[in-house]
Image 1: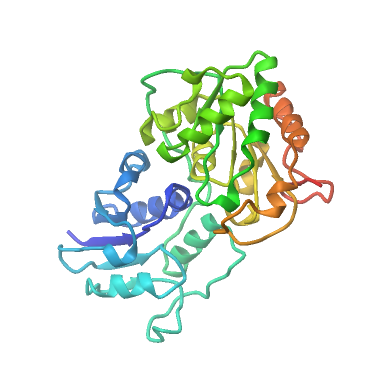
Image 2 (image 1 turned 90 degrees about the horizontal axis):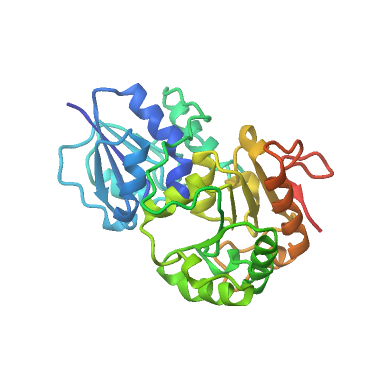
Amino acid sequence: MAVVLVLRARGLGDLLTAVPALRALRRARPRDHIALAAPLRLEPIVDLIASIDEMVPTADPESMRWDGEPPALAVNLHSGGAEGIVELAKTNPARILTYRNPAFPHLDGPDWQHDMHDVDRWCHLLESGGITADRRNLGLVPPVATTSHRDCVAVHVGAGSPARRWPPERFAAVVRHLLVQGREVVLTGDEFDREIALSIAARAGLPAQQVLAGRQSLLEVAATVAEAALVVCGDTGVAHLATAFGTRTVLLFGPTPPSRGGPPPHLLNRHVVLWTGRTGDHHGETTDPGLLEIGVDEVVEAVDKQLSKRTWPGAAVDRRRSAFRRVG
């Protein structure tokens, strides 16, 4: 049995944008053993993808350890940099499928395009290697919730960097509005988000038991997102989970443009993406100035419209008729 080794040692959202590519590999090589090198904490979500035979726990490319036979194919879904190619080359694969990198002139591949949507990026890579990929194949089967919050509004307060964190007092104002409307609200996040989630709950008058941040496993977070009526969050992995489950969202983007990591265009009828059009440092240590330009009123308006209609025509279209709604 031939082995296919795939490197995607990144976060939740990054994994979910690679789902169509992973499923394309499965369809193209149904009898091969597909191993995915990715962070172990993502294993519950990998199981939902149903295309991977083995997880290789890998926090970053340099920590990848492959003890199996040399792969027939190694696929670099990590980045356009050299680090992924270096580590995959150590496994002595018969072939490496990767974006072109000047450090490896002997390896052919397409040129890296910075402005390409991540779903397109990885599907394009496979297609360059002769593997057909369906960009629409993003959906996941929802896990079963141990504690149900069906039809709640899930407000996810966390983000991968301070630059992508909308201010807590603004989240609190949105939560207060939802409570006045009689909506059940839960605050989600990981253990590092719990303190800030509790402060948001206190500001908004939300009971502490509705703060799920730090109390749920990743699979439980996924189940909450899947059964929610609406998810409100920034540019996070939870936004990609909502897309995968078909849950409606209000997404606050900045500093990365949604054209690179937001919901794909064919799914925008279920999502409102707020973005001021400003880009900046994705890993910045303070909230992105463009994200700060998104006000509470804009978010409340978007939330109300999402909750009032099953389908809101033009929900994610701005006045310039682009794919996303610009604010400010």
